[in-house]
Image 1 (cartoon, rainbow, N blue to C red):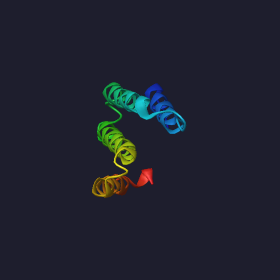
Image 2 (tube, rainbow, N blue to C red; image 1 turned 90 degrees about the horizontal axis):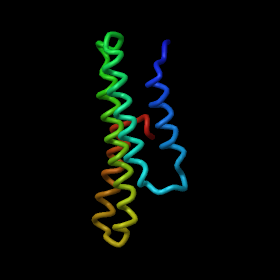
Image 3 (cartoon, rainbow, N blue to C red; image 1 turned 180 degrees about the vertical axis):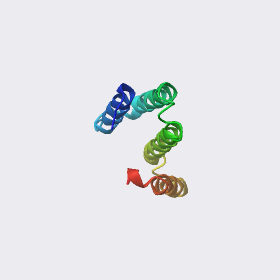
Image 4 (tube, rainbow, N blue to C red; image 1 turned 30 degrees about the horizontal axis):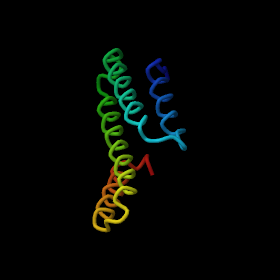
Length: 104
């Protein structure tokens, strides 16, 4: 299997996202947008080997799903006193994990 430099950058960006335990979530959208940029660059430069692959679309769906899960998780603290909103947010987070088994 031949890996490109962009694949390594995507993997590195995802590692940075995963390793940010004690920091705020302010950097997460920047990291996720970086992953999107690298996946689009990788798909356009290596189009002849990925002709039948929808890699860039899958990465985009994954990044949007991660962003939604993270933002809803942050909102859980904000709406801790609002029972109905908390339930709605928990449902959205659960649905986000359900549609992407790799995140579980």
